[in-house]
Length: 152
Image (cartoon, rainbow, N blue to C red; front, side):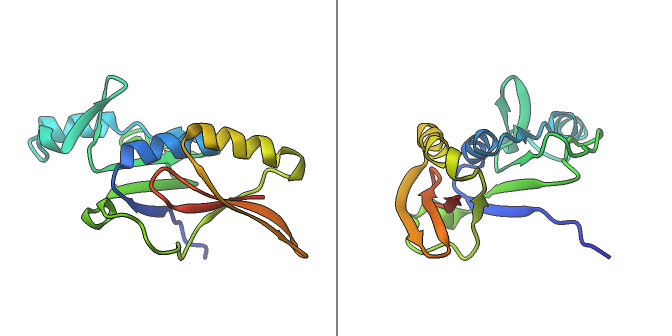
């Protein structure tokens, strides 16, 4: 039996990371405002745990993006398919110094690669290096918090 999963990224600013990756992947930011409002109204969470984003209540320390074609839990706004969850952790506020042990490869094709790299740079990514090998070529970039990813 297959296991349902999501990729969780520890970061300093989950709202900014979610905004970047939603644009980078063509995903949608999850809208958990109905759940947040219910939990606020019942006293389970306090206002300090939330923030307004585009006029809706969101979690201050977590944000997710999901594939637009995947199902969503209507009660929580949580994606039920392909998604990335960004969560704030204290150690992420330090400068990133190590190579990622896990990264995303964005497959756009050789014909689109240069244009895609330029688009991602416009969103805040930085080019780290261009790799040309016998097995193929790709560009290694870093997102706004320094997390590496590749465009192939």
